[in-house]
Length: 403
View 1 (tube, one colour):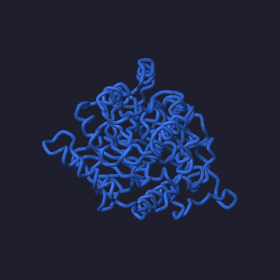
View 2 (cartoon, helix red, strand yellow):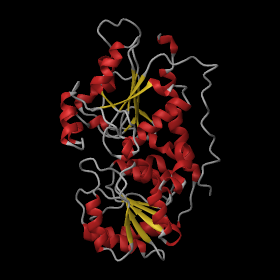
View 3 (spheres, rainbow, N blue to C red):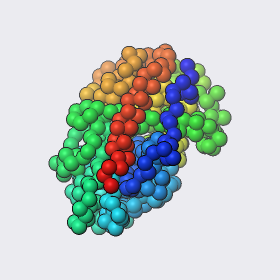
View 4 (cartoon, rainbow, N blue to C red):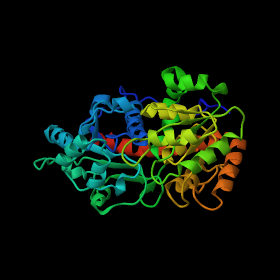
């Protein structure tokens, strides 16, 4: 099977010569102000599609979070602006800004939740000083409109989020012009936007010359024969994980294990915990120390097997058609994604980590996923479903009758 998705029709360039120009700036609001690779993906995807597919000038796309911060060291945006600063810009503009809400489960994150995820005390303090609303990443669109403005309203979009809806975030959702969720529990059903990463950025992440430390690992393993492993630091049994990984590595010869962090914001992953697991392994192992979204995607895309607890690591393994095992509870967000979007009967469902039969289920899952063949039809279907959702809401933003 091809791994380039060359069979997938490339997204079409927007022809600015024959289409109406964009008249308003658009704000991308989400948790891309701290390091969790999935949240940085949402922003990258939105910018790429808005510029390439919807005809936006990149200067008309504003990235916003709770704080003003440079996220470039993580592969993110060098200029994320605080909502307070963006509100002032919108008030001063000829037309108030449109807003697109990004984030996996930002619907259930109040302002205190957002502040706790900031990675330094200085950023926590800045976030508290910038507070405009009780929901962290869903600012009601009215708060970007100055009191004196009498023209057509700005537009708000909820971009295929997941999870529950917290009371402080309800106003933004209920006044949004387009509302999609990846789990279909409410709103229009649409896939997580991370599903288009291979289509948009696959050539970049497959080129190992862009990632020297992964190139080094690849050269020091047998033909790049490695298991890519991510595990959240919360509630981890390092001895159990080490035993499971050694057992998985025994499934194919000359295998190594590569640990990577999908995020280092509070309550995400820990390189120190990976060192503890590594010290207990019989299998040769490496720790990828880069805290960078592109390195994470690349190490997944080149792996022989992906073992994880992160939903977005699972999604990356799916869209690059890598054998994959995910430690996750049934009926949670991972399980919903697998059942709703992977579609492939060969896909291994959630594997419990701590149940009495977890070892058997894990090893059975490893054997099943290693024997499964790649099936790009399922990936293409999910990609098309997201692009249809994007085309719907980006068309609403481009509607010049609001002028």
